[in-house]
Each structure stands twice: as C-alpha cells, then as structure tokens.
Image (cartoon, rainbow, N blue to C red; front, side, top):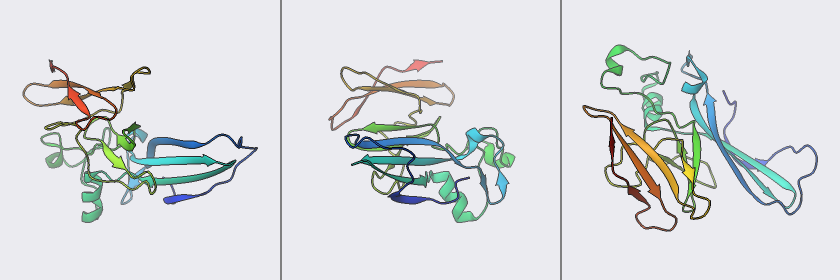
Length: 194
C-alpha cells in the first residue's frame, strides 16, 4: 500500500533528464492492498492509484492519489469493508445482484484534454490533471453502464475504441467510439448479444 498520497512535488532523479523532454506520464495500478485491516485476496483487487510524473526543463515532479470509486467512498464512510472485489469476497448478502467494487486500477484514458481512471467494469472516473483527485463516475453517452480499461486508439484519427459489458437477463456488449472534439464524445455501436 502506498504510504502517502500527494499532489505534484519534486522527486529524486537518477541521471539527467534531457532539457527538451516535456510532458506528463500517467499510470494507474493497484495502490491500496487492504482496507480497515482486511487485506485484499489478490493484487488485482486493490484500490486504484493514479500516478503522474511531469517532466519540464530537466526536472521531474510526481503526484499520486488513491482513485475514490463510489464503493470505496461508501466503505470509508461506514468505517468497514462492505463490497467484493474480484477474488476478495464480501458477506453473501452484499454479493447478491453482483454488487461489487469496480476498482479503477486497470488503465488511464486521455480523452479531450481530460484524464479518466478505468476498471474492468463500471464507468470511467475523471481525474483532475493538477491534483489527481477523483470526481464522480462519468458516462460518455446516455444510459452507458460501463467502459472497460482495455481500449485502442486509432493512430490516424485519434478515435478511441472501447467496450462495456452489461450483465442481466441478456448480457450485452456495447462497443464505443470516442472521437476527439465532439460535444457528444461517444457513439454506441450496435450491441452484440451473448
């Protein structure tokens, strides 16, 4: 578990960063491996940690914050673990209906000058580019249920292709295309029924 979350601050550099190298490297992965003294059963279950390293003028600054998904916020407010997450089980009455914690520890998505933390399910969580603080989950289109952390970017157009799986009486896979600069950034493609 990360021992301290923080905003951008200078970090130690071994060697020399080229003066012309400028930009921000974003990463997301597991960062909190237990909650209220209950360890998670697998590192895939760990709460997400958004990290960013800014390079400018031969210097580096780093920031990291735990991604606050709604289920994690509920657990913190209750002062106890409440949800299943992958291999980590919850009491059976909490698992009925598939209510689990979609930890945003899979990937980051840069789209239309905004960063999003992604999971294996659930909606993307916007991440503030300056503080790395989390916002409420965001749908790219109306009635979108999820957007998974595995996507592809078309190198010619910049379009992002992703999918979401909606479980229920009929499991549905929705495929999305996010195009840069659109006021309605995602276009749902015809659904595939399993």
